[in-house]
Length: 234
Ligand SMILES: Nc1ncnc2c1ncn2[C@@H]1O[C@H](COP(=O)(O)OP(=O)(O)OP(=O)(O)O)[C@@H](O)[C@H]1O
Image (cartoon, rainbow, N blue to C red; front, side):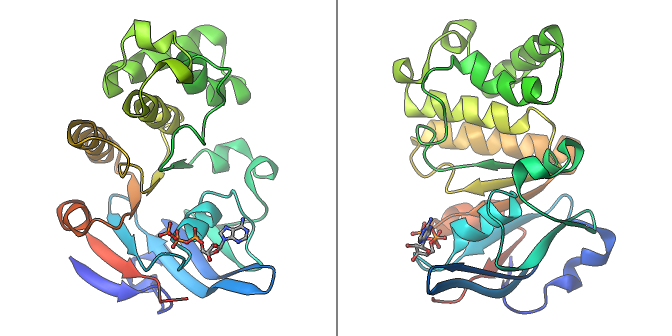
């Protein structure tokens, strides 16, 4: 595994050929500058580890790449195409190419929806007919190891690990080209962690998706990441 610093030019890894890229991204929260002209590139098929001390802006960068947060300057490019704006202002065909999985599934899910509806909701939001959405949900539930009984429950009636499996199914529902995992296995027990990692690894092998892996766990990085990028201390 090689290591570089995110503020160096990262285009050597094939940005010209496409991939998911942050170009000179700067983000401020009030007077605090969290990211300062950061470049980062994830090529199709590779797993890039993103490291850095707490508060260095890893989650912020992931949110920018997932088109959830507009940078103050700089931009994101998907497949070499610059993207303007955030989530719902971006055409569905483009925004669905990137998915994100967060550390805390409870903070990321609507407690009123059943797990089946949580998984299917991004499909419905893009106009996929109900029967097709149900078939895709069943296929993904099988992949992540959720039984029909669990799919019918709401978040309060399942464990964190079961809810994170539903979040993983939801993240894969549009067959994204890039998956951003922000400490996605940090709260899970060892066997759920291994299962989530295996599902993502298998998805990556089948589809050639690129993965950005944010973790404080050096063992996970060594096992999974092709290379690591460091964000400097804020
Ligand atoms: N919405 C927000 N409003 C104001 N400040 C924020 C916001 N989100 C994050 N920050 C601040 O920005 C800085 C970077 O936060 P971020 O969560 O991106 O770092 P991180 O590297 O992911 O940290 P950790 O490893 O602890 O998860 C922190 O100082 C944080 O307090």
